[in-house]
Image 1 (cartoon, rainbow, N blue to C red):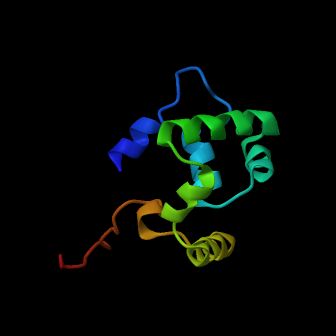
Image 2 (tube, one colour):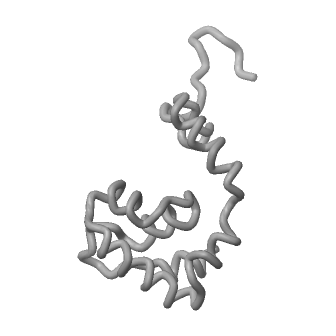
Length: 106
């Protein structure tokens, strides 16, 4: 997994559509390049360049990289959860549960 992050390292100073974001949106979430451009707030040719860079660094096309991504059913469940406001426990804010005053420690 750390090798993936190294391959996706974006040069400093790039603020629009970093490789990590483009990889997540196109490969892990399965969005088209046009949708990715819309989500990143940039133009489609920039996403095409980022995709070419990703393909060069991994030595395979995005279509082949999709074989390593979660199945589409999981993506659908994640989208439904995000629409419903359901987030994983690790992404919830507020930290650890607090004991109420006067309660015994578990």
